[in-house]
Image (cartoon, rainbow, N blue to C red; front, side):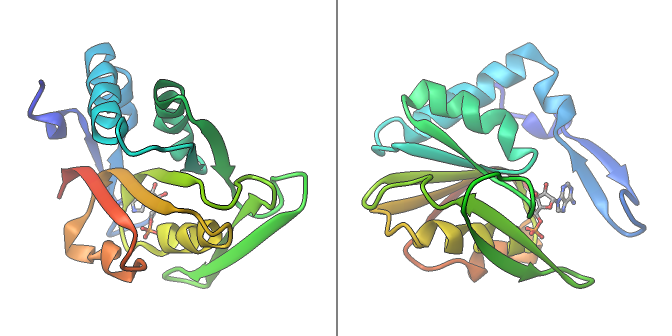
Amino acid sequence: MIMNLKQYVRNIPDFPVKGIQFKDVTTLFKEAKILQELSDMLYDKYRNCGITKVAGIESRGFIMGPLLAVRLGAGFIPIRKPGKLPAAVYEESYSKEYGTDAVQIHKDAISEGETVLLHDDLLATGGTMAASIRLLAKFNPRQIYVNCLIELEELNGRATFAPDVKVDTIIKY
Ligand code: AMP
């Protein structure tokens, strides 16, 4: 077990705009032993939860998401920015610092009563994740689990989620 995963996260000051400390996960993923460690940690957390679908948020949720889905024997569902998914979609919008944004999911992505794990690389204000949770709730799942590799705790993003959602993150700042 490699305890200090933080040393593998690259911090980029003032990216993409001044004042943001960007947490770059590519430096985690490029190390074979760290990629394996993350995969094992996620698998151990969720192996007994009865997950039938892993939903990943565009685009950094598309890296560990499918990898974890394969290990759990679950399907993978992409949650994408507007205009990318080709078939009929549900959409939820959320506010950002300037203006609004939205996420979409295919209407036939999930069946009622499934257990879904929603994954992204990083939880900041929680806007993207909360909108994605609202998308998943439309399918009336048995349980929604949320996982992010990194959580910026002072922003308290998880406070914006529905109370029955089970949230877990690995590296906390
Ligand atoms: P939020 O909706 O504020 O929780 O933002 C989460 C989304 O924005 C995730 O998809 C992250 O990849 C990205 N993000 C937000 N803040 C950062 C940050 N400081 N470093 C890296 N990615 C970030």
